[in-house]
Length: 183
Image (cartoon, rainbow, N blue to C red; front, side, top):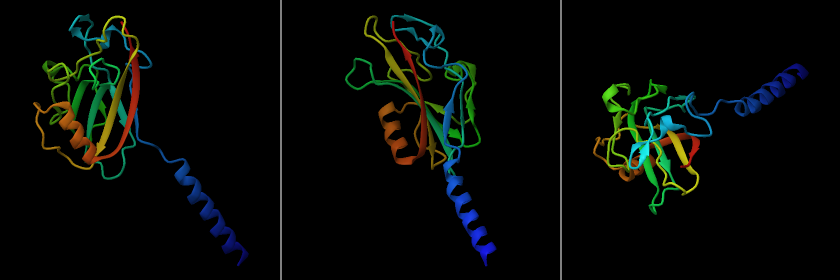
């Protein structure tokens, strides 16, 4: 009797602590950290960077994830509504990484089936940082969305706000990293 009670207590404690140590949905990058470099700066619009999208890696997506989407948003842009630098969706659920440069449509590095729609620049693919000179530090929020649908039903001409609305309806979990840049 004492032994069964002891086993029951041990099982309860282990179950309680198992949730504490569960892995969380996480976004990482080998290319970016706290600061952007000229590699991630836009080439145009008054900027002269390399406009290379960073490598991104994610892990521990929640159960039920059927696809992913990635957004890059600058809330500090002097537009009144921020600025969308990258919008990628319909990334298959078996994909866990985007290679550096995947945001350049001419390179063909994005996963098959993934859609890169238009940004606030009015172009498709990655559009790097280009804050106004002297405007201060801008934050660039990279977010991976784990989605409960395999397709959003949108195309590459869909604007970021509409994509965002569909993401809001279909996101199971999300994870973000932030990089900063100023000119």
